[in-house]
Structure formats: C-alpha cells, structure tokens
Image (cartoon, rainbow, N blue to C red):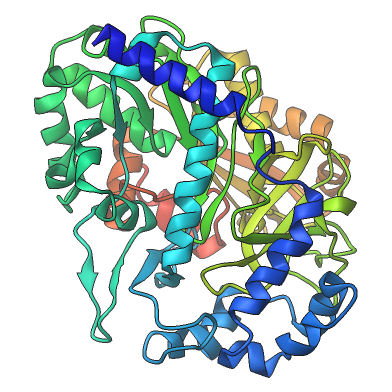
Length: 507
C-alpha cells in the first residue's frame, strides 16, 4: 500500500508538471460566455433574448449585459425553469435529468435548480483541478492510500411527477459516482442513501473503525456533529485515535473561521483546511495553495462570472439589487471590495444572482473569499452589518470571554418602548454572562463598522443577547427541517422568525 500511495502522489505531481496552462484567466471568460450562448442559441430563452445577435457583437460581454437582465431565482424560475421541468429546450438544449433542491437559508419553500450533464461534468472538472493542486501541500504519501469521507445530503433521490430526479446537489453528485469510486469513497452509497440524519451518522460511527479516512469534505457544522458522535460512540479521545491518517478537511458553504476552535478540539494534531465553493448551481472555486483559505475562481469550466458592487452602485439599503446595477467583468474587479456574485452557467442560469457576496483577496491569482449572503445583510436601522463583520465580532468576543460560539442568529426587533434593538441568540455550551457578551459585542461592532456606530447613536437603541445551548439549537433546526447535509443555518432573521427562535430557548 505504501508503494501505491507513492505512485498516486507521483502521478499527480507529474500531471501537474505537464499542465502548462492554468485553469482559466480573465481572458478566458469571453470565450466561456461565447460557448454558453452558442449552446443555448436555439432555446426559448436564447431566442427571446437574441443570443444570435449577441454572438455577432465585437464585445459579446457588453452586448449580453445590455440584452439580458439580472435575475433572482424567483424571476428565472417562475418564467423559465418551471417550464423546463416539463418541456425541452427552454434555457438549455433538452431537458435536465436532475433538479437540485435547495432551501437555502431563508426557510421558504425549496428551490429547484436544473442540473445538466454539462454541469455534472463541470463539477468533476473543477474537482480535478483541486486534486491537481494537492502537490503544493506536500502531503504525506499515506494520505494517497487513504479514503475520503464526504458527508452530504441523502443520495436517495426522489422521482418528480414530471419524471426528473431531485435531491440536494451533494446527493445528486454521489448518485452519479461510478462504481469504482467505492474503493476510496465513504460512507458509500448504501449509507449515503439513508435519509434520516441521525441514523446516517449512527451508521458512520459504527463503521468508522473499519475505514482509513484521510480526508473529509462537508459543511462544518454538520461535520463537527458527525465527528463528535464518531468519537463518543467509539469511546475515543480524538478523531485521530480512530482515523490516524486524517490530514485534510475540505470545508464549504460557510465561513470556516467560526468553527476552527471546535475542529482543533477534536483532533490530536493540526489538519490542513481547504475551502471549496460548491453550490447547488455549480462548483465555482477552491483553495489551491497552502497558507490561505482564499479560493481560486474556476474561470474555464462552464461558468461566466459577473460582479455587482455591494454598495449604492449595485444594491439598495436592504441589500436588494437595484435596476440597472453596475456589473464588472472578471478583468475589472478590485481587491478587498464586496461584490454580489452573478453567474451564467452550463445548467441554464442566466445572469443569476446566487445570493452570495465575495471579495477578491488577490486579483492577480483570482482568489476570492465568500464574505456573506445578501440575505444576511442587517440594515433595518442603517447599521449596514455584513455577515463577515458579524462573524468577526462574535469570534472576537468569544475569544475575549474564553468561550466557543460557532453559531448565532440576529434580528432587528422592537422593544417594549417601540424602539429598535438588535436581538442576538448566541449558541454555546460554555456558560457566559449575557450582559457582558452584549456589551463587548456592541463595542466590537462599533469599532468595526462606522455605520453601526452612527446607527447606535440614532435609531438603534441597543442590543440584547440570549444564550442557547447546542442541543436546543439542534432541536429547533430539527423542528424547522434544517438538519444535516448541505443545509446552511440562518444568521439574519426577520422579527417574526426571531420570536419563534427565542421560544426554543429554555426559560
């Protein structure tokens, strides 16, 4: 087996050495758009918006933006994707075999996003690029003998009345794994098809000692719960007592920094963390080098990217896209600027607002970080708090008080006097003084965001912090059907949702 690991590692290194071209650059993006338009030229969407004429333009990027409006899920779904579930050639040629179900973080009815064969190939291609980046990390050869555990949603897909299969994107990906993947993929298709989250984790814990896990991939909150159960069930001290080869964790979906202390506490030695940007709409970026959690944008694999400034040029005071927003090409972006990500994809999304905000940590290397969700923008009183600023403040206060708090929720609510306050719920199993946390959090937010400081002197009269234990938090998510898999839990809530959430806090 040692020789097998060495051969695999050397093979990847040779493949990387012979790969003279990188995985895409800003100059590749017009060609990506051209290919997307040519493929969909004769679809209903392509005919309606004149893709044939756009393709004749000397600047197809400018012509495309002039002809096709920016759209949300509701807009493209109501007019186009609902038809694509029944009829061929609507936004892409043919009719998709799969639709990815995503409830997102809003708690509304599930979204259904088309998944084409081209999209599945794109996801595989970006995954291959990630593997080609591994030699930069100088991992031990034992890692390449080990197995990878992917904890996603159930691979037991549902058949819709229209005939397509539907489930979360991670389940669709697993269901399309070839049989030979079973030699290194865990927990295997049989366990992955278990729909009940607790039962699936229980089966993983029971089988864990038989596996040689070297890498784990999944959303941090659910990965941590799984690791804790594996450790508890097997009466171990750390996860390395069970999986000594565990060396790599591929995070995704949310900012990992909130969970770093939790992961470290479960490990006997440091684990390399790589971030990934795999959404229901596609695989867009991955960490490509050591020493950073920034992700390299996959610019040459079937996605055309646009970037709308997350300020008055692109959004209103509630974070919603304005009419005719400024939209930058990849070649026009600036570092350390928040942008709303807009995508056009090989699955039939056209100028689609995915709901994430990103910033470029390196324009030269086209490396990005996800800074939040547009729906996680808290601005009811002019406070203009982004998810990134709130995450940083919660981490700062948690470190100051010596506690671990990786989950929280906040809403702008009115107090008994009719004044606005920010109501926070902080999830932690460490006891802490709620008033001290509130005071420190208020100070940290004032320091980090001048708009918040101004709001605190005007319409925003204060903030209240309620502590919640993790078991109560999970019970709430269970009730709200947001447990496990690819589910991202809400951070910014409406006042009504917060009232319901607070009811889960024991008196």
